Length: 423
Image (cartoon, rainbow, N blue to C red):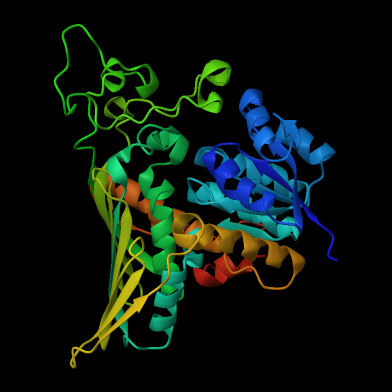
Protein backbone atom coordinates (compact mmCIF):
# COMPACT_ATOMS: atom_id res chain seq x y z
CA UNK A 1 0.00 0.00 0.00
CA UNK A 2 1.09 3.53 -0.72
CA UNK A 3 1.83 5.69 2.27
CA UNK A 4 -0.87 8.28 2.90
CA UNK A 5 -0.10 11.82 1.78
CA UNK A 6 -0.64 14.44 4.45
CA UNK A 7 -2.27 17.73 3.50
CA UNK A 8 -2.70 21.17 5.02
CA UNK A 9 -5.42 23.49 3.77
CA UNK A 10 -4.78 27.22 4.11
CA UNK A 11 -8.03 29.17 4.12
CA UNK A 12 -11.19 27.59 5.56
CA UNK A 13 -13.81 29.23 3.37
CA UNK A 14 -16.12 27.35 1.04
CA UNK A 15 -13.41 26.47 -1.45
CA UNK A 16 -11.05 25.10 1.16
CA UNK A 17 -13.66 23.16 3.12
CA UNK A 18 -16.52 22.22 0.79
CA UNK A 19 -14.31 21.52 -2.22
CA UNK A 20 -10.81 20.34 -1.35
CA UNK A 21 -11.59 19.40 2.24
CA UNK A 22 -14.56 17.21 1.37
CA UNK A 23 -12.73 15.61 -1.56
CA UNK A 24 -9.69 14.76 0.57
CA UNK A 25 -11.85 13.42 3.40
CA UNK A 26 -13.33 10.83 1.04
CA UNK A 27 -9.95 9.49 -0.08
CA UNK A 28 -8.23 6.54 1.57
CA UNK A 29 -4.77 7.56 0.30
CA UNK A 30 -4.74 11.04 1.86
CA UNK A 31 -5.33 12.65 5.20
CA UNK A 32 -5.94 16.26 6.22
CA UNK A 33 -3.30 16.91 8.85
CA UNK A 34 -3.84 20.61 9.52
CA UNK A 35 -5.98 23.64 8.73
CA UNK A 36 -4.87 27.25 8.82
CA UNK A 37 -7.03 30.34 9.03
CA UNK A 38 -6.53 33.69 10.73
CA UNK A 39 -10.00 33.24 12.20
CA UNK A 40 -9.55 30.55 14.86
CA UNK A 41 -13.30 30.05 15.33
CA UNK A 42 -13.88 29.49 11.64
CA UNK A 43 -10.94 27.07 11.53
CA UNK A 44 -12.35 25.13 14.49
CA UNK A 45 -15.75 24.81 12.82
CA UNK A 46 -14.09 23.62 9.62
CA UNK A 47 -12.00 21.08 11.54
CA UNK A 48 -15.18 19.61 13.00
CA UNK A 49 -16.40 18.91 9.48
CA UNK A 50 -13.14 17.43 8.23
CA UNK A 51 -12.12 14.88 10.81
CA UNK A 52 -10.60 17.17 13.46
CA UNK A 53 -7.20 18.01 11.97
CA UNK A 54 -4.86 20.32 13.88
CA UNK A 55 -5.80 24.01 13.83
CA UNK A 56 -3.41 26.91 13.28
CA UNK A 57 -3.79 30.64 12.84
CA UNK A 58 -0.14 31.05 11.85
CA UNK A 59 1.04 29.39 8.63
CA UNK A 60 4.71 29.50 9.58
CA UNK A 61 3.99 27.60 12.77
CA UNK A 62 1.89 25.03 10.90
CA UNK A 63 4.71 24.38 8.45
CA UNK A 64 7.24 23.95 11.25
CA UNK A 65 5.12 21.68 13.45
CA UNK A 66 2.74 19.74 11.18
CA UNK A 67 5.23 19.26 8.32
CA UNK A 68 2.62 18.26 5.71
CA UNK A 69 3.53 16.67 2.39
CA UNK A 70 1.41 19.19 0.53
CA UNK A 71 -0.33 22.52 1.06
CA UNK A 72 -3.47 23.70 -0.73
CA UNK A 73 -3.94 27.48 -0.70
CA UNK A 74 -7.51 28.77 -0.92
CA UNK A 75 -7.15 32.13 0.81
CA UNK A 76 -8.31 35.43 -0.76
CA UNK A 77 -6.26 36.10 -3.87
CA UNK A 78 -4.26 39.04 -2.51
CA UNK A 79 -2.66 36.74 0.09
CA UNK A 80 -1.65 33.96 -2.34
CA UNK A 81 1.84 35.36 -2.78
CA UNK A 82 2.60 35.58 0.94
CA UNK A 83 1.21 32.12 1.71
CA UNK A 84 2.86 30.45 -1.28
CA UNK A 85 6.31 31.88 -0.61
CA UNK A 86 6.15 30.74 3.04
CA UNK A 87 5.08 27.23 2.06
CA UNK A 88 7.67 26.87 -0.68
CA UNK A 89 10.48 27.95 1.64
CA UNK A 90 9.58 24.86 3.68
CA UNK A 91 9.88 22.74 0.53
CA UNK A 92 6.39 21.25 0.43
CA UNK A 93 4.31 20.42 -2.62
CA UNK A 94 1.83 23.18 -3.30
CA UNK A 95 -1.47 23.68 -5.12
CA UNK A 96 -2.74 27.26 -5.47
CA UNK A 97 -6.35 27.82 -6.38
CA UNK A 98 -6.48 30.33 -9.22
CA UNK A 99 -5.19 32.96 -9.69
CA UNK A 100 -1.51 32.42 -8.92
CA UNK A 101 -1.28 36.00 -7.63
CA UNK A 102 -2.99 39.29 -8.35
CA UNK A 103 -0.02 40.82 -10.20
CA UNK A 104 2.70 39.59 -12.55
CA UNK A 105 5.26 40.79 -10.02
CA UNK A 106 3.68 38.60 -7.35
CA UNK A 107 3.65 35.64 -9.74
CA UNK A 108 7.36 36.05 -10.43
CA UNK A 109 8.13 36.04 -6.72
CA UNK A 110 6.24 32.77 -6.27
CA UNK A 111 7.87 31.19 -9.33
CA UNK A 112 11.38 31.99 -8.13
CA UNK A 113 10.67 30.34 -4.78
CA UNK A 114 9.06 27.34 -6.47
CA UNK A 115 12.16 26.73 -8.55
CA UNK A 116 14.31 26.68 -5.44
CA UNK A 117 12.01 24.23 -3.69
CA UNK A 118 12.18 21.51 -6.33
CA UNK A 119 8.66 20.40 -5.34
CA UNK A 120 5.44 20.03 -7.31
CA UNK A 121 3.99 23.51 -7.77
CA UNK A 122 0.59 23.30 -9.46
CA UNK A 123 -2.07 25.79 -10.48
CA UNK A 124 -5.69 25.19 -9.52
CA UNK A 125 -7.04 25.55 -13.05
CA UNK A 126 -9.88 23.14 -12.50
CA UNK A 127 -11.76 23.92 -15.72
CA UNK A 128 -9.09 22.02 -17.64
CA UNK A 129 -10.54 18.90 -16.01
CA UNK A 130 -14.15 19.55 -17.05
CA UNK A 131 -15.06 16.63 -19.36
CA UNK A 132 -16.76 18.88 -21.92
CA UNK A 133 -13.78 21.23 -22.21
CA UNK A 134 -11.43 18.26 -22.44
CA UNK A 135 -13.51 17.04 -25.38
CA UNK A 136 -13.33 20.48 -26.99
CA UNK A 137 -9.53 20.48 -26.65
CA UNK A 138 -9.41 17.04 -28.29
CA UNK A 139 -11.47 18.35 -31.21
CA UNK A 140 -9.23 21.39 -31.61
CA UNK A 141 -6.03 19.34 -31.49
CA UNK A 142 -7.20 16.74 -34.02
CA UNK A 143 -7.72 19.49 -36.60
CA UNK A 144 -11.44 18.94 -37.13
CA UNK A 145 -12.01 22.69 -37.07
CA UNK A 146 -8.95 23.55 -39.15
CA UNK A 147 -6.81 26.53 -38.22
CA UNK A 148 -8.40 28.34 -35.29
CA UNK A 149 -8.68 32.12 -35.58
CA UNK A 150 -11.57 33.15 -33.33
CA UNK A 151 -12.87 32.12 -29.91
CA UNK A 152 -15.58 33.50 -27.66
CA UNK A 153 -16.59 32.73 -24.12
CA UNK A 154 -19.72 34.13 -22.48
CA UNK A 155 -20.03 33.58 -18.76
CA UNK A 156 -23.23 34.23 -16.86
CA UNK A 157 -23.24 34.08 -13.08
CA UNK A 158 -26.56 34.10 -11.29
CA UNK A 159 -27.41 37.47 -9.74
CA UNK A 160 -23.93 38.28 -8.50
CA UNK A 161 -25.09 37.11 -5.10
CA UNK A 162 -21.75 35.68 -4.09
CA UNK A 163 -19.18 37.67 -6.03
CA UNK A 164 -20.46 41.06 -4.97
CA UNK A 165 -21.34 39.99 -1.42
CA UNK A 166 -17.99 38.44 -0.46
CA UNK A 167 -14.37 39.54 -0.49
CA UNK A 168 -14.29 38.78 -4.23
CA UNK A 169 -16.06 42.06 -4.91
CA UNK A 170 -13.24 44.11 -3.41
CA UNK A 171 -10.40 44.80 -5.79
CA UNK A 172 -8.00 45.06 -2.87
CA UNK A 173 -8.66 41.39 -2.08
CA UNK A 174 -9.19 39.90 -5.54
CA UNK A 175 -7.14 42.09 -7.85
CA UNK A 176 -10.36 42.73 -9.76
CA UNK A 177 -12.71 40.26 -11.41
CA UNK A 178 -10.72 40.10 -14.66
CA UNK A 179 -8.04 38.47 -12.52
CA UNK A 180 -10.11 36.57 -9.97
CA UNK A 181 -12.84 35.31 -12.30
CA UNK A 182 -11.25 35.86 -15.71
CA UNK A 183 -8.09 33.91 -14.90
CA UNK A 184 -10.16 30.73 -15.31
CA UNK A 185 -11.26 31.65 -18.79
CA UNK A 186 -8.05 33.25 -20.03
CA UNK A 187 -6.27 30.05 -19.04
CA UNK A 188 -8.83 27.99 -20.97
CA UNK A 189 -8.07 30.07 -24.07
CA UNK A 190 -4.31 29.59 -23.58
CA UNK A 191 -4.65 25.87 -22.83
CA UNK A 192 -7.02 25.07 -25.70
CA UNK A 193 -4.64 26.43 -28.31
CA UNK A 194 -1.28 25.31 -26.94
CA UNK A 195 -0.29 28.54 -25.16
CA UNK A 196 0.19 30.99 -28.03
CA UNK A 197 1.84 34.24 -27.02
CA UNK A 198 -0.70 36.95 -26.09
CA UNK A 199 0.15 40.38 -27.49
CA UNK A 200 -2.50 42.88 -26.49
CA UNK A 201 -5.67 43.24 -24.48
CA UNK A 202 -8.61 45.66 -24.55
CA UNK A 203 -11.34 45.57 -21.94
CA UNK A 204 -14.63 47.34 -21.45
CA UNK A 205 -16.43 46.89 -18.15
CA UNK A 206 -18.47 48.69 -15.58
CA UNK A 207 -20.75 48.51 -12.58
CA UNK A 208 -24.14 49.23 -14.13
CA UNK A 209 -26.57 47.48 -11.81
CA UNK A 210 -25.14 46.81 -8.36
CA UNK A 211 -24.91 50.46 -7.35
CA UNK A 212 -26.30 52.37 -4.35
CA UNK A 213 -29.23 53.79 -6.32
CA UNK A 214 -29.91 50.52 -8.16
CA UNK A 215 -32.16 48.78 -5.63
CA UNK A 216 -34.91 46.94 -7.59
CA UNK A 217 -37.53 47.82 -4.97
CA UNK A 218 -38.63 51.05 -3.31
CA UNK A 219 -36.84 51.97 -0.10
CA UNK A 220 -39.04 52.77 2.86
CA UNK A 221 -38.66 56.10 4.58
CA UNK A 222 -35.88 56.17 7.19
CA UNK A 223 -35.10 52.44 6.76
CA UNK A 224 -31.66 51.89 5.29
CA UNK A 225 -30.82 48.65 3.45
CA UNK A 226 -28.02 46.31 4.50
CA UNK A 227 -25.36 46.25 5.64
CA UNK A 228 -25.77 42.51 5.02
CA UNK A 229 -28.65 40.24 4.06
CA UNK A 230 -28.77 38.53 7.45
CA UNK A 231 -29.46 41.89 9.12
CA UNK A 232 -31.46 43.67 6.43
CA UNK A 233 -35.08 44.74 6.88
CA UNK A 234 -35.77 44.28 3.16
CA UNK A 235 -34.28 40.79 3.07
CA UNK A 236 -36.10 39.70 6.22
CA UNK A 237 -39.44 40.82 4.81
CA UNK A 238 -38.96 39.27 1.38
CA UNK A 239 -38.73 42.59 -0.45
CA UNK A 240 -35.27 42.01 -1.95
CA UNK A 241 -35.19 39.22 -4.53
CA UNK A 242 -31.40 39.24 -4.47
CA UNK A 243 -31.19 38.49 -0.75
CA UNK A 244 -28.94 35.55 0.09
CA UNK A 245 -28.40 35.57 3.86
CA UNK A 246 -25.64 33.53 5.50
CA UNK A 247 -26.44 32.62 9.08
CA UNK A 248 -24.20 29.55 9.39
CA UNK A 249 -22.02 29.70 12.50
CA UNK A 250 -18.79 30.10 10.52
CA UNK A 251 -20.12 33.29 8.91
CA UNK A 252 -21.97 34.81 11.85
CA UNK A 253 -21.91 35.06 15.64
CA UNK A 254 -18.53 34.80 17.34
CA UNK A 255 -16.69 34.03 14.10
CA UNK A 256 -17.91 37.28 12.58
CA UNK A 257 -17.07 39.25 15.72
CA UNK A 258 -13.49 38.01 15.57
CA UNK A 259 -12.60 39.54 12.20
CA UNK A 260 -15.70 41.44 11.06
CA UNK A 261 -16.00 39.45 7.83
CA UNK A 262 -19.46 38.78 6.42
CA UNK A 263 -20.29 36.64 3.43
CA UNK A 264 -23.59 38.32 2.61
CA UNK A 265 -22.83 42.03 2.44
CA UNK A 266 -25.34 44.03 0.40
CA UNK A 267 -24.48 43.65 -3.28
CA UNK A 268 -25.92 47.10 -4.03
CA UNK A 269 -23.54 48.68 -1.54
CA UNK A 270 -20.49 46.73 -2.69
CA UNK A 271 -17.07 47.99 -3.71
CA UNK A 272 -17.55 49.51 -7.15
CA UNK A 273 -13.92 49.04 -8.13
CA UNK A 274 -14.95 45.72 -9.67
CA UNK A 275 -17.46 45.28 -12.50
CA UNK A 276 -20.81 43.53 -12.83
CA UNK A 277 -20.47 43.13 -16.61
CA UNK A 278 -17.82 43.51 -19.26
CA UNK A 279 -15.88 42.27 -22.28
CA UNK A 280 -12.16 41.56 -22.54
CA UNK A 281 -10.55 40.96 -25.94
CA UNK A 282 -7.19 39.24 -26.32
CA UNK A 283 -5.14 39.11 -29.52
CA UNK A 284 -2.42 36.49 -29.84
CA UNK A 285 0.79 36.53 -31.86
CA UNK A 286 -0.52 33.77 -34.15
CA UNK A 287 -3.56 35.86 -35.12
CA UNK A 288 -6.13 34.19 -32.84
CA UNK A 289 -8.58 36.63 -31.29
CA UNK A 290 -10.45 35.74 -28.13
CA UNK A 291 -13.31 37.55 -26.43
CA UNK A 292 -14.36 36.83 -22.86
CA UNK A 293 -17.61 38.19 -21.46
CA UNK A 294 -18.58 38.28 -17.80
CA UNK A 295 -22.10 39.07 -16.64
CA UNK A 296 -23.17 38.87 -13.01
CA UNK A 297 -26.66 40.30 -13.53
CA UNK A 298 -28.68 37.29 -14.63
CA UNK A 299 -30.91 34.51 -13.40
CA UNK A 300 -28.71 31.72 -14.77
CA UNK A 301 -25.21 30.32 -14.41
CA UNK A 302 -23.37 28.87 -17.40
CA UNK A 303 -20.31 29.20 -19.58
CA UNK A 304 -20.81 29.19 -23.35
CA UNK A 305 -17.80 28.70 -25.64
CA UNK A 306 -17.59 29.13 -29.41
CA UNK A 307 -14.42 28.22 -31.31
CA UNK A 308 -14.19 29.04 -35.03
CA UNK A 309 -11.68 27.56 -37.45
CA UNK A 310 -11.17 27.46 -41.21
CA UNK A 311 -13.03 24.12 -41.49
CA UNK A 312 -15.80 24.54 -38.95
CA UNK A 313 -16.86 25.72 -35.55
CA UNK A 314 -17.66 24.22 -32.17
CA UNK A 315 -20.04 25.53 -29.54
CA UNK A 316 -20.70 24.25 -26.04
CA UNK A 317 -22.73 24.90 -22.94
CA UNK A 318 -20.86 23.82 -19.85
CA UNK A 319 -23.95 23.60 -17.67
CA UNK A 320 -25.96 22.04 -20.48
CA UNK A 321 -23.34 19.29 -20.98
CA UNK A 322 -23.56 19.64 -24.79
CA UNK A 323 -20.99 20.33 -27.49
CA UNK A 324 -21.89 20.86 -31.16
CA UNK A 325 -19.51 20.80 -34.13
CA UNK A 326 -20.74 22.37 -37.38
CA UNK A 327 -18.70 21.79 -40.54
CA UNK A 328 -18.13 24.85 -42.71
CA UNK A 329 -19.34 23.76 -46.15
CA UNK A 330 -21.39 20.62 -45.66
CA UNK A 331 -23.43 21.88 -42.71
CA UNK A 332 -22.75 18.49 -41.18
CA UNK A 333 -23.54 18.68 -37.49
CA UNK A 334 -22.05 16.49 -34.77
CA UNK A 335 -23.55 16.75 -31.29
CA UNK A 336 -21.76 15.41 -28.22
CA UNK A 337 -23.76 14.98 -25.04
CA UNK A 338 -21.57 14.39 -22.02
CA UNK A 339 -23.35 12.79 -19.05
CA UNK A 340 -23.72 15.24 -16.20
CA UNK A 341 -20.49 14.82 -14.24
CA UNK A 342 -20.14 14.58 -10.50
CA UNK A 343 -18.25 17.22 -8.59
CA UNK A 344 -18.03 21.00 -8.63
CA UNK A 345 -17.32 23.13 -11.69
CA UNK A 346 -18.91 20.68 -14.15
CA UNK A 347 -17.02 17.73 -12.69
CA UNK A 348 -13.66 19.49 -12.82
CA UNK A 349 -12.75 19.73 -9.12
CA UNK A 350 -12.18 16.01 -8.46
CA UNK A 351 -10.00 15.81 -11.57
CA UNK A 352 -7.87 18.71 -10.41
CA UNK A 353 -7.15 17.13 -7.03
CA UNK A 354 -6.43 13.75 -8.61
CA UNK A 355 -3.96 15.39 -11.00
CA UNK A 356 -2.15 17.09 -8.11
CA UNK A 357 -1.87 13.84 -6.15
CA UNK A 358 -0.56 11.94 -9.17
CA UNK A 359 2.02 14.66 -9.80
CA UNK A 360 3.19 14.41 -6.18
CA UNK A 361 3.50 10.63 -6.49
CA UNK A 362 5.32 11.00 -9.81
CA UNK A 363 2.81 9.02 -11.87
CA UNK A 364 2.03 11.94 -14.18
CA UNK A 365 3.67 15.29 -14.96
CA UNK A 366 2.51 18.64 -13.67
CA UNK A 367 0.65 20.10 -16.63
CA UNK A 368 -0.67 23.24 -14.87
CA UNK A 369 2.50 25.14 -14.11
CA UNK A 370 3.07 28.43 -12.35
CA UNK A 371 4.44 29.84 -15.62
CA UNK A 372 1.01 29.24 -17.10
CA UNK A 373 -0.58 30.73 -14.00
CA UNK A 374 1.42 33.90 -14.51
CA UNK A 375 0.26 34.08 -18.12
CA UNK A 376 -3.43 34.14 -17.21
CA UNK A 377 -2.78 36.67 -14.43
CA UNK A 378 -0.92 38.86 -16.94
CA UNK A 379 -3.93 38.90 -19.27
CA UNK A 380 -6.24 39.67 -16.36
CA UNK A 381 -3.97 42.43 -15.08
CA UNK A 382 -3.81 43.89 -18.58
CA UNK A 383 -7.61 43.83 -18.78
CA UNK A 384 -7.89 45.66 -15.44
CA UNK A 385 -5.35 48.22 -16.66
CA UNK A 386 -7.17 48.62 -19.98
CA UNK A 387 -10.44 49.30 -18.22
CA UNK A 388 -8.88 51.75 -15.79
CA UNK A 389 -6.90 53.70 -18.40
CA UNK A 390 -9.30 53.32 -21.33
CA UNK A 391 -6.68 51.97 -23.74
CA UNK A 392 -5.22 48.90 -25.39
CA UNK A 393 -2.58 47.31 -23.17
CA UNK A 394 0.36 45.45 -24.69
CA UNK A 395 1.42 42.39 -22.69
CA UNK A 396 5.07 43.37 -23.01
CA UNK A 397 4.28 46.26 -20.64
CA UNK A 398 3.75 43.70 -17.89
CA UNK A 399 5.99 40.86 -18.99
CA UNK A 400 8.79 43.12 -20.31
CA UNK A 401 10.71 40.73 -22.61
CA UNK A 402 13.50 43.28 -23.14
CA UNK A 403 14.50 43.32 -19.49
CA UNK A 404 17.38 41.12 -18.39
CA UNK A 405 15.77 38.28 -16.46
CA UNK A 406 15.98 38.41 -12.71
CA UNK A 407 18.08 35.83 -10.96
CA UNK A 408 16.01 32.73 -10.40
CA UNK A 409 13.47 33.32 -13.17
CA UNK A 410 12.49 30.07 -14.80
CA UNK A 411 14.10 29.07 -18.08
CA UNK A 412 10.62 28.42 -19.42
CA UNK A 413 9.63 32.06 -18.89
CA UNK A 414 12.84 33.29 -20.50
CA UNK A 415 12.25 31.14 -23.59
CA UNK A 416 8.57 31.88 -23.78
CA UNK A 417 8.92 35.64 -23.74
CA UNK A 418 12.18 35.70 -25.67
CA UNK A 419 14.01 37.45 -22.87
CA UNK A 420 17.73 38.08 -23.19
CA UNK A 421 19.48 35.63 -20.91
CA UNK A 422 22.21 37.31 -18.91
CA UNK A 423 24.87 36.05 -16.58
